[in-house]
Length: 400
Image (tube, rainbow, N blue to C red; front, side, top):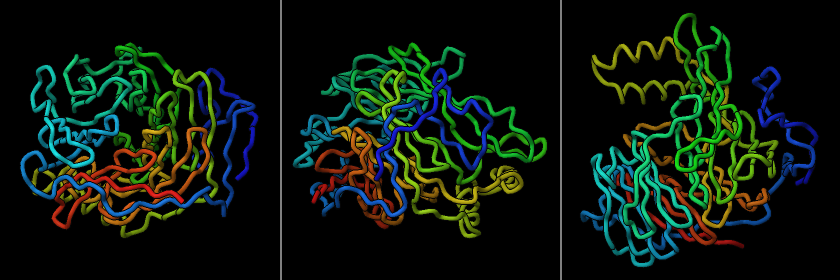
């Protein structure tokens, strides 16, 4: 690995002020910003692995342990495990050592402390924030006592923002996708997002960053490139990291976005071409999700307008570890499991980077397991059995 300092500029923190070239979309960094450049053949510093589960919640199939559409799993002070169950819109607390159910808060509804479809959950230094499908954020203390609700945030330009995470001090990382109306027919164009910080939902613009690639056939509306790169964004304590996976490049910034901290660059990764079988699977999944005559018009429109990427993105998800590490996960094609956050059918390799950008290790996670959170000695997520029944699982993280 080479530790480099690249010249360049972040004029007003607006990335890509020059015309976009889809094959080379890497923003320039300010002079003096550390760049962790991993050449072909580079390896991480250590060899980590996960062991057999130390805790499985869901095997007894009684009510507090029946999960569906789990939206998040968090360790609360290393003593309690919070499971955000999307099927019931409940926040369920368990003893992290024994798995014993402690109590449940929330539920379906639109009243204080209730959720109109539980979507995501995050932890701050002094609380828990759960977001529902409408974009409302419900704030609780670390014991699960409801505090307040904030409506869906809106940017200074009047567009709805999506919450992407919470910093340790409770401020929100959010983003809004800019309009794609200027996508030209028969061309591939990048659609941008605006990254914002929210304090009590008052927006403060941080920077622009590419979000996805859109295409258009003739007069049809713009369409996201199937299996194309989509930006990944995560709050990580007192910093945030973002990457547009047309290449393996991840940029990390200070909390207020005013200072680039470092860049991670991998020159090689597992490049997977998008082949005929992937295209067939894509249409099969959409047919299964839109059956019968009601779905036929949409499927016909999809077949006429869908355009595919040449290869899968370099990565897909960024997960911030409790200890400040950044976990970077591979792209997983959408399967036919009818849940919002499916787990892959095969084992996946995640790369772990330190808070200062060093490539610490690669970790292979088992098939049918979705990572939700991690710490210095564990990973936590959801496992699915052969019948797609969900269980919450903690795996020990072994470092050597």
